[in-house]
Image 1 (cartoon, rainbow, N blue to C red):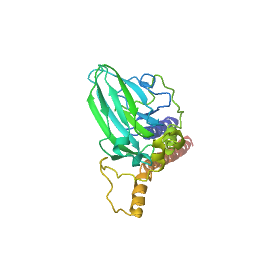
Image 2 (tube, rainbow, N blue to C red):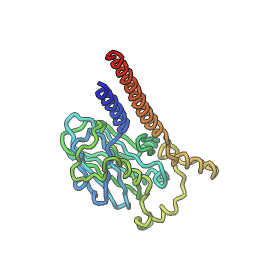
Image 3 (cartoon, one colour):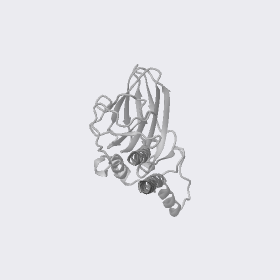
Image 4 (cartoon, rainbow, N blue to C red):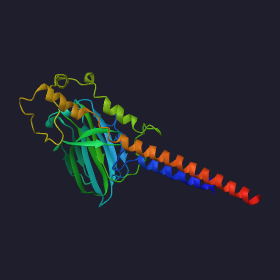
Length: 286
């Protein structure tokens, strides 16, 4: 009985830890490469209602990246466009931010363009983004084509779907992840900006000479920074945008510590009960 109780408690603790490893509102990451230049050669998501986050890097204004997603009649198509909340992307003017061309199965299309700037903190990876735009509509049967482009080189994220189902097979895509290291490619993508030497023409000079300060969260993309702002205030604003938030990590540490502590206490109680039973049995036999 003691062994069964111990095994049961251990299973509960492991379940708590597993639930904490996959947070609410998380997206399964997919990383677009330089070969994914169009929807037809990019990753194919079998179900566009499953939550995926597609991380991409546009190396020049002439580059596009794409992917496809399958939908059924009546499904909810949920899209969001984001950029990392760090330089240089936060300094981009509205006309230089990435846009997403979406072609429906019937050939009609629309564009997901930057219309807002709202800070979004992702607690599991402890990274922050600026959400630029959202789109929701009732889907039609077939495959949707998504093409991302931008007037300046930079990084972006397109999120799709709301149903959390991690590990779903993605067609025309090989996952770079291994068990236990699921977030490392995200950190690499987040920490390494587009290389300046990969950018050509006048755009390269514009990026190198860019001196604009990053906009504040929830500030409209068309707003211009007020004149007369001091360099100290600018530096403080930049830190506020770029400094990573650590509010996601303490929660996981607390859960892990509490779970381990509960397991230790449970084992001690079971051991004490076992000793008492042994003593009672010895007293009866004598």
